[in-house]
Image (cartoon, rainbow, N blue to C red; front, side, top):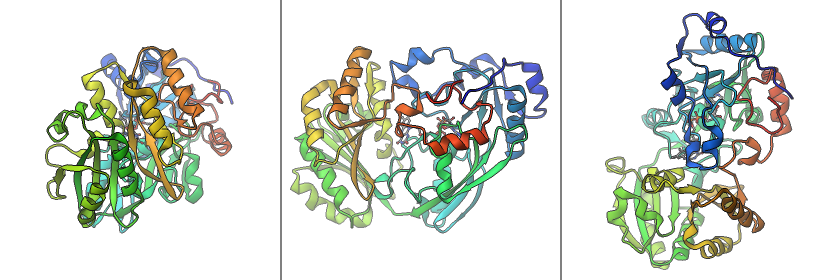
Length: 448
Ligand SMILES: Cc1cc2nc3c(=O)[nH]c(=O)nc-3n(C[C@H](O)[C@H](O)[C@H](O)COP(=O)(O)OP(=O)(O)OC[C@H]3O[C@@H](n4cnc5c(N)ncnc54)[C@H](O)[C@@H]3O)c2cc1C
């Protein structure tokens, strides 16, 4: 598939979208053309200077349709943006054109028992708060839940806090419906339901503009936050696994961090002594009573415990997990970068091997999730970066040992979690984006 992009003509384009909010001020354009690909020393120079010609901020679906029609008419590339917290350069407009900022579309259409429908620009924390009013909550959220939008999570995220209970966003049942606006001459509004949601799920904004999301909720628990420290990293990892496998214990987060990672958690340092590895946990209060027995088995020590009523006051444990770990480490040392991996299910043998093999060069950060009916270990290891060659060597070594790498140092969809564009994705793209205008350049399969 090839795209038919034409040069941007500001006058002609803006004349096609009268009354819709736009931004053309250069420093704002530069800011809104960025995301968190800057965690990668490889992506940073590659994406430097890639800036949109205009940012458009629709207030409702009618305005989204008008912008889509204008882009199709003038053959202008369009990059949809939520909060811009993606970390693969997903929101960076490689070919300029329009950034479609969805953050004004913040309506929570409805919330009922077990399910909610919201506009794409709704922040995850706002939906969670609303759902909690009736005893429900988001099943899972990225550690960026306070700023990230639901549209951006569906189109660019994968899972996070809550995935230990519910799996990943891509898993059947974690997304019920998507409303998508096409980039045709006369844009249509399509409702995708059941299996069809996968046509736009994790499509990085190349398969239509998501305007509404219908998402299942989980029962809201009172969540306690706990920090456990360990002398041995493998004791921490084995404890994490034992807790993950305790099906009757309700948990939302199990993150395990090898030394010296906890030292980057400034606000938590007082609870984690130097020389200790740590596990950061979010557990339902009803399961807390069972925790000490399990911790004792692995020689851990509880150093911090916050009841549900106090969680959210002061430091939030969730904001030290997933890719927030990288954020904290980089605040202390910008030469640190990271990997995104899934370890084979071999009773933590490969985890132990990599921990020993790389030592301080690759610091182990393990997460635990429910995955295809079992427990899996995604990891977001911190890497002391030296050269791109060495980084690729580290990646290769992991792959040779059966570790799946969703490469955060590439901006191609095919190098990420999915490793390919599904033929169904491509078929849908040909229909919804016949001119190849959506986020061009992000797929190896589609020539801009
Ligand atoms: C510190 C940090 C921690 C993170 N932790 C996690 C984590 O725990 N789990 C996780 O999965 N991710 C994580 N991420 C990545 C990212 O924050 C999440 O995926 C987040 O959900 C993205 O939401 P957003 O609104 O910022 O999306 P954006 O970054 O704005 O967009 C992401 C992608 O979705 C597309 N898109 C956005 N909105 C729409 C729409 N309405 N229609 C069509 N396409 C759209 C964009 O074009 C882009 O390709 C983290 C990132 C950082 C920097």
